[in-house]
Length: 261
Image (tube, rainbow, N blue to C red; front, top):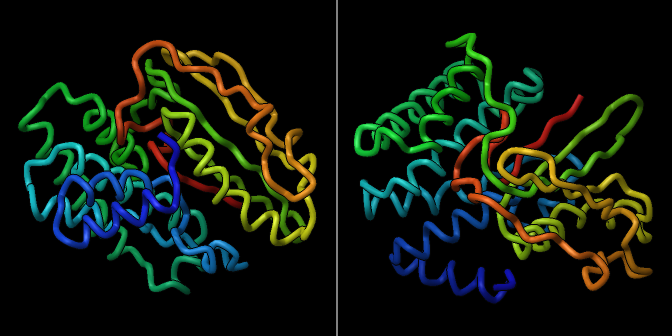
């Protein structure tokens, strides 16, 4: 089903009214975005706002035993730790420090433990704990960079001022979600260049059972009005078992992540 603003609006209304299923699904969709505000998306400060977090928390308050919501929230907390560890000065300027990162680490760990106590074989929780420990220096284990599942990775590489570079990635398992996330990913790029971003380094990678299955250079398929021409882009269907929601892919998780330097 295509992801539209109308769908998101309906989910938001139902979640606000107290529907935990709507809150969890809204949180799942929003975890694929840096922000759900077009104004924030165009902000040159490049801040992540974690729009999924309040909805996943609402789902868990309504149903504390919701393993899917718990794994997703834990994964996003891990992503927040990774984000704020990129640049200490940037983190401090936004009120982040060792205390706030430790709070996220403790909460994410507790969520994963809760899931594993109920379901010891949960693959997303098991891999999530390993990723959390690696990120916070609590283990020297080698992470499985390409888990044995099938998924899409949408990658945008962009250059900033001087030698500054930033990359953004969205991991998902459905073509409609790729298209929706891509529209948000490209909105600030199109606004900045004020013309079709022909040749932008935007690629979609497909993995089947953890193995690279192909890639599409999406930067070659923009129209004159700056939109991606999805009519000429054939996203291949996934084969094999889809990546579980919240499952890490290396140090990234299902959903949005970024890096810069």
